[in-house]
Length: 315
Image (tube, rainbow, N blue to C red; front, side, top):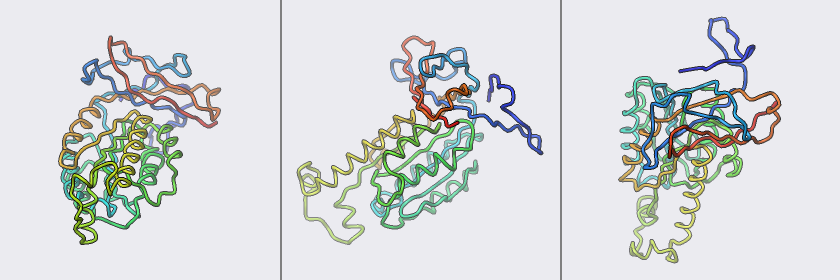
């Protein structure tokens, strides 16, 4: 971890001698790739420029792939996932086993309720046990509430590199947080969102859930104007929304067959290990509650940069 300067009066020491940061540091996750899509780790702070509302601001925080990362793994356990949940759990377990000793993760399930199955830790056995304990729950799917709770409550006070990895079919039923409010909350956080969206075959779901076998052929069931047209239209809308969440957070959206989740997890792992985190202290005049734009420049020819694009700071 590298703090590159700290304004006077922004830090104090508690009774245990730990340093407490009292200023509103704005953290900006950054992913850098070359023109062929390969990640570019190993860059130094001098390679980066940070612009707030078009003007350069000094970088006060710079973290690289060597620094720990904290991950909130969210598992959709609503009724609609009963046909795919076991495969998802196995893929999720393999993903968490790839974490480095300095990394940590928490496991959360959501349906009608939001359950923290394992708090933030680095113990592979505890994490694996938490994933195995996830079971299909109520008929609701409080997906937006779960993401909001992670980004704005449980991960908000945690410094450093952090991300939410979400496995879901994207359907939301029963959340109190609106779709618009969640987009705003995610954009205001410094947490990357990585949704892995998978499709659920309504024919298989009917058989597993209701014990009713559909007589509609699979080819006809999958047609846009077929008997399940409304189902697939809702799925498409859900996928588009998840993609929006990933974009505003500087994360990445994955649409994957349940059998191929391992591929999405491998890409997420590679990206998280290449992620940078830069930060700055806004001028007091910017603590006005207004939306301010952020742009990150990298001194690498042809580099493609993905980063947090705005922030809103209250007085």
